[in-house]
Amino acid sequence: MSQPATAAVPQQLRDRLEAVGQSHVLNFESELTAEQRAGLVGQLERIDLERVPRLIEEYVRAKPTFDAARHDIRPPKAFAHDDPSWNRDRFYDRGAEAIRAGKVAAFTVAGGQGSRLGYDGPKGCFPGGAVTGKPLFRMLAEWVIWARREFDAAIPWYVMTSPLNHETTTAFFDEHDYFGLPREDVMFFPQGSMPSFAMGSGDILLKSKHEIATNPDGHGGSLRALHTSGALDDMRRRGVEQISYVQVDNPLSRVIDPLFVGLHLGAEGSSAEMSTKVIAKSQPGEKVGVIAEVDGKTGVIEYSDLPDELAEKRAEDGSLFLKAGNIALHMLSVEFVDKLNQGGSLNLPFHRAEKKIPCVDRESGTPINPDQPNGIKLEMFVFDALPMTAGSIVYEVDRVDEFAPIKNAEGSDSPASSRRLQTERAARWLEARGVSVPRRGDGEPDCTMEISPLTATRAEALPAGKLPKSIEPGAEIAL
Image 1 (spheres, rainbow, N blue to C red):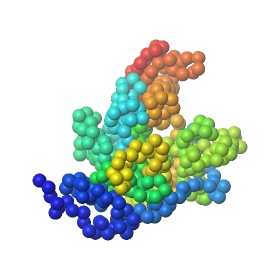
Image 2 (image 1 turned 30 degrees about the vertical axis):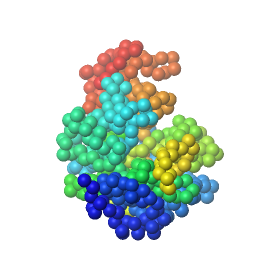
Image 3 (image 1 turned 45 degrees about the horizontal axis):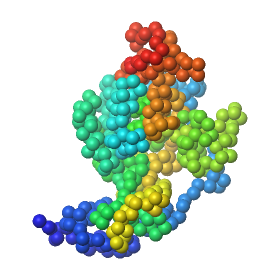
Image 4 (image 1 turned 90 degrees about the horizontal axis):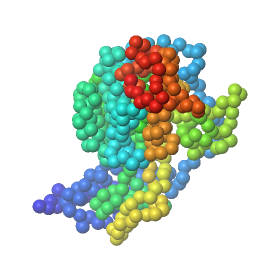
């Protein structure tokens, strides 16, 4: 039964669309069912329409660029993992104290799909364990479980999904009994979305006659989703003051890291608002953004914006001048995220991407499947919050210990490269405890290994009495 009265487009919405030059999205209104019309109205009411003209001028009709020559760019001050001059125990104890007091929460950005991996489902469900094939979600959950046991603390875990994979993700957690975590301590919420725009004109694209073409608002949108979902309110209710941010595709992420928490807080209690982990870039052309001091503020320069001469510049010791590669591991204070959302809008800059976006013609409704980029997608990046902080800590970690991402089906950042890094980390830890590990002529371990944080979170924590004296060539071992 049709419901024309309840499904009508509100006049106020029509007026708002007219005011921003986007009334074409209602061109097929008369052809829609009541349900379709209601769905379209719901989509439109979730868009900040008054902001659209400025976005079009700044990001669709214009192409913002970063001109490195116009900025004073220097390496950031950083705590390096191999620098003996700073007291790790002091910072570890500071972080452990905060975790034990229930002041630290885990936050995982898990909105991505596994399509680039040839996997049909949320990326967090992809088998990431080098030997066990444990899904990425389980590998991250084990860090939360370890911290809960180690510090006798109720650590909440917030998981940001996407509208596309929210139900699949929650069903996966349910199927696996939340990996042994209390259900009341795991909260899911979807990230926001942005309308996609026609290149040149700035028209909001229609995916169909009754649906706006949208795209996720980027990992920077996670900071807005924390606010709109009620997650920040839940954190304050629990007494959480600090958020440990990780992305789902890195199985070596230390989801709760007492040392990093302590560095972020400061040994004397002068805490930073947002801090970040980095790795030393392997080569000038490595495709990771770099953390740098830009005009006196900590920030990230995307690899595509870094001129070759600056990317290749060397410091006096021969290392890269800008070597601090961004790996998307952060600490943020609840107060800082709340401050970013004051006024009802997260004021991070957007990043522009030219994409081939299937849509329908705005006049005829004919489907268009472009073979060339026809539209602009806008998304926010979480690291753009760094220059907005009153204080920030940079911590350079060992790549092998903390960075083995799974993003691509083959080559770098693939399941194969992640297995190698997981194995290398295990090999180093075992060798540090006197275990003989077979290595090939190129130095790579001649075996495949995986160590769960439930067994050990560092070499020194490996249970000496339970370790083998040696590993056989070709062995597959999970500890």
